[in-house]
Length: 148
Image 1 (cartoon, rainbow, N blue to C red):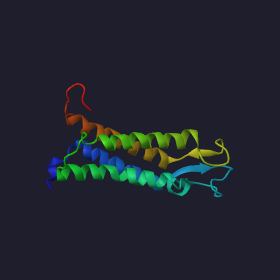
Image 2: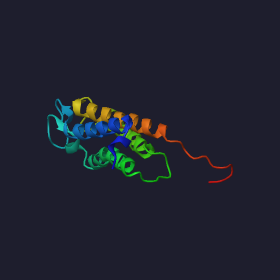
Image 3: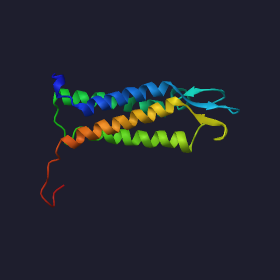
Image 4: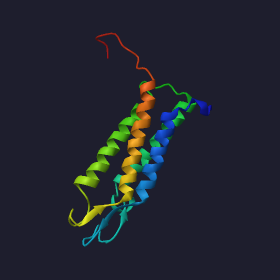
């Protein structure tokens, strides 16, 4: 395995995955008067979201899988980095929805966002940017008209 095969995009995506992983365990929400799952005060995304935590955990590993595919020079039927970019787009949507629209707690007025949520969003944006850099360097094979 030749580490020289990795480009700047993979390193940016891996850093984004690490940020997403770190942000998952930092405080996402804090409550002033209300409670989230019966607990008042700051809580991390890992504590609050029982299903989303595993989705984000798998998404944080996606850049490492991309780097492994590049290092092993596996043949793919899609441009390298494209699937990681799609995963990052889905995670950005999930994070924005859970942080801005459907905040947990007794009332949205009583729950505010903390640094961990911002770090997780920045991590997924880094993943998206790095994967987009990688997928833009590989050329998609053109097919003749009328074929699938």
